Image 1 (tube, rainbow over the protein chains, first blue to last red):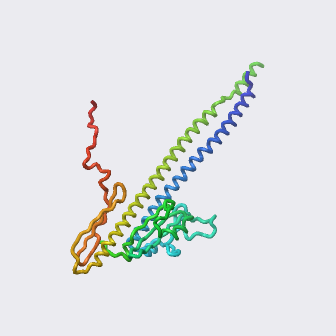
Image 2: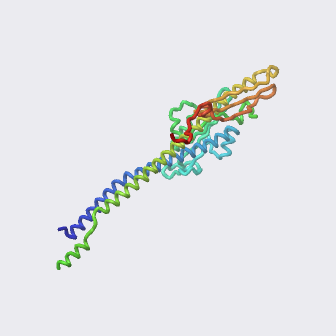
Image 3: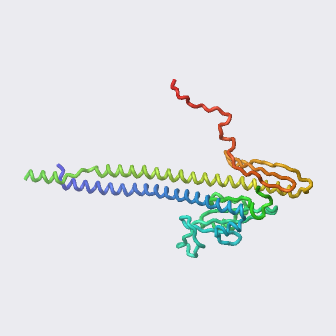
Length: 168
Length: 140
């Protein structure tokens, strides 16, 4: 016949087992939630980058690259214009020296490309802040192999300054 | 004495297995919600990428159209004003599977300008000229 004490021991053992099992299973479930959150963050980054890049490019195509840079208050850096954003896609100033406290997460870089036959192109590229240097230097060559790593990269002819024809 | 003992036993009786049942139900619920949330996030990412690809495809066509227009304008500029005739150029560029970019340029002796820059649905993917079998509502 089982005693009350034995019953209590069984209950404690069951609780320990259940807690242990729950701890192990919850690690896997938590990982699924973390992955879901990361995927959602990526989705937001891609769609926000696309919308922002497109609006900058449209303005640049119609009015010229320097006019677009002035309108969107972009910072001039080398031969390009840059906008910095934090992880919530809020505009921030220039990135700080200390990377650990740096709120800058994304950058949008706009460049003007002039060809020998007189055409002017505007190229707007959005990506992670780690890709800033590549966005600033590269882009002249369309055969860039790692384009897909950017959040969005758009390029078109500028119909503003330097455009030969007229739009009716 | 015996009665007292059995009362103590009754008091100390604890149902075992209940915690396992609760664990099973909560793990099942958490797993279902986790799978649903990862599926939703994945679909959202795919949708965002599709939108990005579609915008990129449009601007690629837009750039090609701009280059072609520039060629036409340059040719018009290089023609002597006396040799210029009233003309209409038009061309279409494929953007992606179901979109085309239509451009029309009108030129005369004094002017050469774009008169149309239009994104349209292409004929691919439309049911024009095809018969579609639709259930007529009767059960045979």
